[in-house]
Length: 68
Image 1 (cartoon, rainbow, N blue to C red):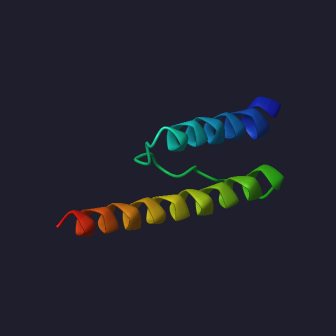
Image 2: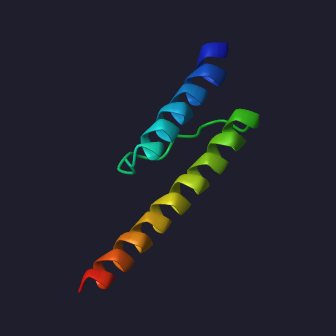
């Protein structure tokens, strides 16, 4: 039960954070089903994930315009 409620979401967040640190922003957001602290953390992580994607997209557009 602890594995499903705590460890699995934390492992998924860790993998996503590692992917972002390597420049990979193509994954999906975390699936959130609970209402506990881990679910709150996962929602916050998803908000951060969306923000990072937006920032990277803006940077890429800016770089493309600068090359023109």
